[in-house]
Every structure is written in C-alpha cells, then in structure tokens.
Image (cartoon, rainbow, N blue to C red):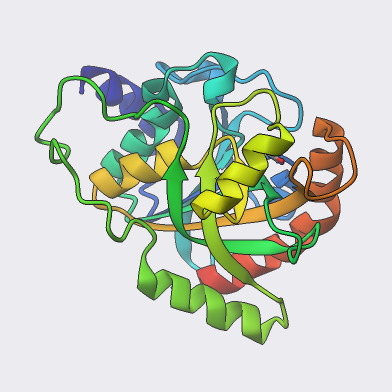
Length: 269
Ligand code: HPA
C-alpha cells in the first residue's frame, strides 16, 4: 500500500491529479492506437515501483488523455512474466489504476490461434480464460482492503461490455470472433503437441499475458474487457515457423482494426 501511494504521488505530480475512469493496456504491435492522441506521457522507468521493459515493440510509457470526454490512461507495453517479472510486478499497474479511480480495464494482446478457422489479423473478444502460467498474481498475504482471499472467477470478462463490443464491431463491419484465451509463461512458443492439447482443453488462442492482469482486476472488482489480435496460427495449426517479427508486423497491419473498434467502444461506454 505504501508503494502504491508513492507511485500515485509521483503520477499525481506529473499529471496534476488526473483521475482516469478507463485504463487500456496495449499489447505487442498495438502502439499505433496512440498515434493521434494527445496527453501527458510518463515513461515507466521514471515511475517509482514500476517494473522494467525489454521486449521490442513496446514503448514503455503511460499516456494520460481524454477520448470522447472520457479520461483514460493507456499503457503502451506491459510487464511480462517471461522477462523475469513476478506476477505481482506484472500486475502492479492495475492496482495503481484502481487507486486512481479506474472502473473499466481494457486489455489487448497478440496471440496465436489454436484453431484453423481463425485467420491472421482476426480480432477475438475474450469471454473466458485458462491460466496455464503455473503461477497466480494473488499468491501471498492477502490485503483484505483490496479484495477477497478467494475471489469468484465466474464472470471475469464483463457481459455488458462484451455486448457493447459486439455491437460496435457490427457497426464497423468487423468480423469479431469470440472465445477462450489460454495464457502460458513463454518465452518459447508452443510445440505442436502443446497447441493440440490446449485446443482440446478449450482454448481458442494462446498467448503470454493478459490473464494475470484480468485476475487482479477481477479481484479489485473492476469491469474487464479484453481482446486478442490473432497475429499467427499457433504451432502446427499453420505451416509457418513462428517469429516475434511476424507478431509485430501483424500488429502494424491489423492493429488499425482493433484501434477503430476500441474507439467505437470508448464512444459508447
Ligand atoms: N503463442 C504464444 N504467444 C503468442 C503467440 C503464440 O503463437 N503469438 C503471439 N503471442
């Protein structure tokens, strides 16, 4: 709590007590969402108690801005488990956002499809998840002023927000897929046998993020909306070998679609 207060004090001094209602986390290659937005940027490496970013394709800044008169904070890049961050560090910003007054959290990520009727460039609305990371951000002593020891997980991804997302996609003529995101630790991509297993377990896409943040946001009773951008077919579903460059390139071409969908949703919520 003391750490969160120090982080808040610093951000308040930078933003003159900006109080965002919506937080958006942009995944790999999705940074273009911020291209035409103006506001106050704060670099992660200046912020007390924030983690560190190393992976290519993530900018490493918070942007405080208004979109359709709604105060937003946008995370351009996140703290991944595979970088060696604990899940407590990976989810620390979510606790800070909650303390700033954020009610709605929108998470985005790049992911590989475990099914062959998804296409590269598709956007999938996440309606549930499977935590296959082998860790949980809530492990440790519970601070009951933040949330319950054993939080219910029956509706992590808010149904009302999902309906808004589906209607917004319809309006924009976007073929929005919907399904289950399975989170792995990474950083190695999956083997063919693993992807086959994940698909049998009920996963539609697989990725290396989002679930820890969603678990903490649900614990903090925030409304969560989350999207995967299908940057590749997972190992064995498509023919190609996987590379991080492919993930970033796809973000550049399909990121615009997700950006316009996010804008439409922000106009409506
Ligand atoms: N697997 C795991 N994470 C990913 C993938 C994938 O195929 N694509 C983008 N992130």
